[in-house]
Length: 420
Image 1 (cartoon, rainbow, N blue to C red):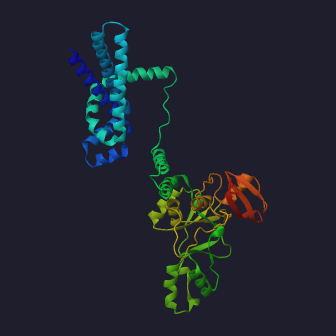
Image 2: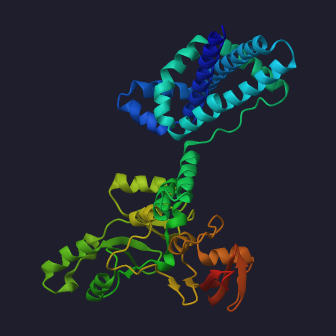
Image 3: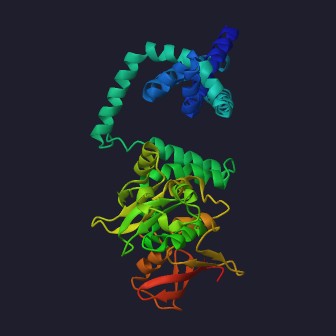
């Protein structure tokens, strides 16, 4: 008789451990990994995904089974110790102590520890038995869910919270692995940069009109060709009269193809036949949409205008890609243009430098929600146009004004406030 009790209790404890481990494994299983395995034809992964698609059902079934076997095991243990020690508080105290320790070690801690260390493999093993349990107990689970939802609604706790979006989940995973050292900082910037594209507009990443290299279409043809060849860029806007009056885009390859047959007589060069039509885009265009347009049109260059049609800047495919992979330099580029490191660890920064570029170059974390450029950030925070020599501390960084031209801040020395 005693042996029968012990065997029954041991089996119930094993079932309790199975339920506890299953709950831990299924809740910790990687949905991305299961999705990939299902695509490869793994039927066990398909069963896991079905369970994960309706977490309330499988958790309810597991809790139902776990509580049932634990209560039954406790009843049998109480009967066993009552038979051994007689009626009274001693048998109840021994049964309570023994079952608490036994359930805690063998039915909770040990199976959950094992499951949390290998959630994907354990999930694949337990998915089918748990699926059978969910189907068998479906009517009980529905009744329990109804009672629970009713009580929560009566208490005013029934409104569901906002679900975590896939993007937030991905960002959280990237930041977590970066913090733990599993993802390098450069890789984190690339991954997060791809997610950030949908939050940026063309205005955030464009090159300001004051920094665009343009050519005057009325220049002597030889002088124009020499300036075009001296430029580090292959695409140059041409203007006539005012710089805002763009008449076309000159491509270096088109220029060479047209100039070589002339045998050095560049006065015969007909610019009108080789200029490409400028493409104007609004400054409010989302960067992601602009990237899609670049890819669809097979173009790499666009001019940015505001709501009044005034030229604001230009954007290239490279500018967008740099938001993902960081600065792309070739043999003609200036490394970190507009940013010059100083011996004391500070940075001399031209006012037009985008905050995002400065952050990428230095690893800093200056905010770029209210302003695009470093000068814009200083003016926004200072609520005035500062004078040369003034100093401000914002967000843990010190900004010393180096140069000002009319109403524009053209040079700033930036350093961490603690260092200065």
